[in-house]
Image (cartoon, rainbow, N blue to C red):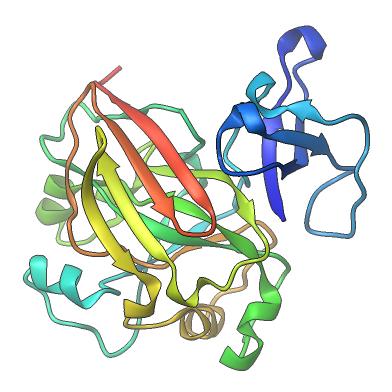
Length: 264
């Protein structure tokens, strides 16, 4: 099941709703979205008539209280960054204010001269949880979406830690929807810039797999419904410039595309 968060046209009230996306493929012309009553973190039913997906604006599929990120989680990426593979997962946070949705612009900061794309599989947490053993990890996951851990690389290097470089507004695109029926243990994760393939790996290459990540994070942090875990980026990260479009594809989920714009 594909669950989207969307805004209806202003002439129809402009309401923001969750809905179920149905139809083949990803082309909005072939898809419809049917609103649900309430939110996807509890039992729900469909309400109202299906809307053509092309007639609504897709938003970030969730508004997380926090985005928990796993660094250095693909061996090839660790190698390209000149780092060593960690024994335990490396965890950092992105603020909720960094989250944007499909089609929203990634805004380059005025004081950065190197902003990189980082394609990632994103886990969407389905319920409040703490101290989840790996054998129960999938029970607390609502589904998966595409994520882009946009990074001001020069800020990261200058600060010797990652908070500023990862936290700018618009630096966490998510979408286009949540796929709730996916075995994410071996799916492709790709990034393209203006259509050119830059990152291409499968989640089977994760150093710390999804159950291990959930177990590690919930050992010290309570996760809430709608929180997001970014599972790490593969090799091939690279710079973005104003005027480009960057897309992230996760097999079995879809494609998230965002334009890149200059400072505002």
